[in-house]
Image (cartoon, rainbow, N blue to C red; front, top):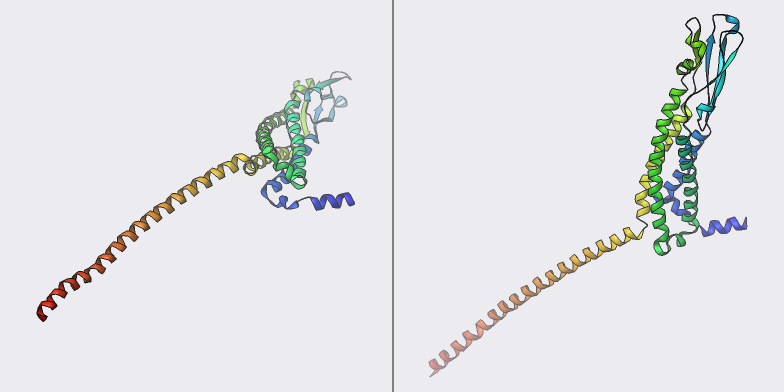
Length: 284
């Protein structure tokens, strides 16, 4: 408890109220949802084979598949309807690369968001030291934004292919007995896709979060602060130039005002000089 209290007292949790920390927490949560909904998926479909000889029929053939969706390794037993024999049928397609890529990005994004949040809270001074921390954070955020876009797009395409490969109507064409017109095949039910559809949504939501967080991370870097200093310097230079022009204009106005005042002052003296001799001659 003492260690936890020391960490809590040393930490600055107010950073979680700022966009930089708050978005990191959302990235951490959404990454969990992304890899949990995709990596934890398992589905099942069922088809029926109704042979002309009813005793050889199988009206509920269950086919299970799951992450990472190597469907070419998924097999099931189906009746041949010719004698008491079954055949082993394999699904078609391997979509593990896109699914594993998506889950890998989600796991690494989860780990990085968690570490970054801890650094924001407990090691802010080290984070801002020498501008190295914000620069690394900015580069990693840009990379993850791009990787989320790529992995989510790839997984969206792979999920569409998985849905096609596991469609009960398509699976029926893989069964030999279903190619005979005297036999009847049908679908009992298909897989539920709500979990995988949710994973795609969370993938693109993660892209939006990471792309939006680029600006807030960039504001912590020296590049943004240097641009602000240049902008402040330019504004101060303009202000100094404006003040110098104001001072110059005010000085010019003061000089012209004193000249006019002096002119008004000298005018009565000339009048007194002219008036003086005139009065003296009258006295004479």
